[in-house]
Image (cartoon, rainbow, N blue to C red; front, side, top):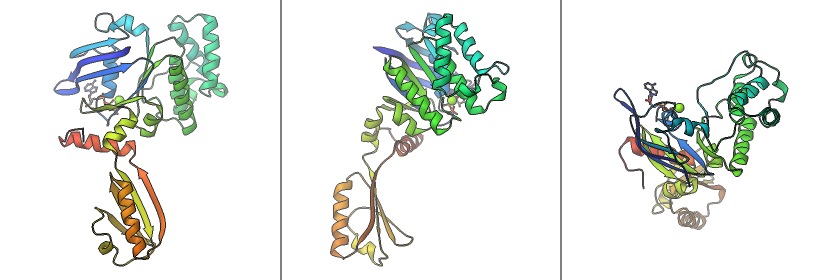
Length: 315
Ligand SMILES: Nc1ncnc2c1ncn2[C@@H]1O[C@H](COP(=O)(O)OP(=O)(O)OP(=O)(O)O)[C@@H](O)[C@H]1O
Ligand SMILES: [Mg+2]
């Protein structure tokens, strides 16, 4: 079942098309990652999907509800953590959670149980009695994300939830999210940390200048755009290495303590065999060798650059 279905969704600010006729389909029970450079339209899309701002065109269906016809019914079933920090300065951490639960009409028993669960899941026990004004920025972000889990929901939008979180808090949040998804929650999530998207997401869409330029699973994105691998071979100092390597494809050679040959190739196994043969027949010993798959980060940069220069997203 589709949890989010947007068709030709658009939002313009003056003559800026912040979101330019995008289509999105997000299946229930999945984690959908929404990536793109600054100003690409991610936050605007989240605000459109959560009915926080009116669209300039297109349709949004949330959990089977036409969001333009019945925004309140849609909002009741979703949660959203916006990019913008939001907190009540004088409330303590535990009262912030408690109050959020009250706003959502969560009964007091459930509230008490959830407050304890979240204080511990988000590592907030030690600061539970502190006011939001008196805690660190990362701790405040943790409270802002944690409080959203006070209420029941079927779909949660998270706009860069891990900004400012230390590595262990970040990993804790990602794993907490995964647990909730196992229990049936659907997540729409933006981040600039591509390892995070890769770790968490079933599907990833990349947006640039208001248009979606790629949608796929992380593995498929890698398959489509990242068959290329990087081979690095270090040998001792060799003078005429360029002559020897003629015919093995394009490579780059640098010299530091020895000679480093770097080759990007979609056909890395064969290229590697060829080079090793050449080196072997010239009695050159390999000091170090690595073959690294292209990262999601490189794919992101390639896809965005291609779309900026008008080259099609597909290879
Ligand atoms: N309220 C607004 N009024 C005018 N222009 C806006 C408004 N909000 C966003 N924009 C413009 O719309 C475009 C998309 O902005 P948006 O905030 O959606 O980007 P983003 O992908 O979330 O970026 P970031 O990674 O920096 O959070 C930008 O060009 C931005 O300047
Ligand atoms: Mg944003």
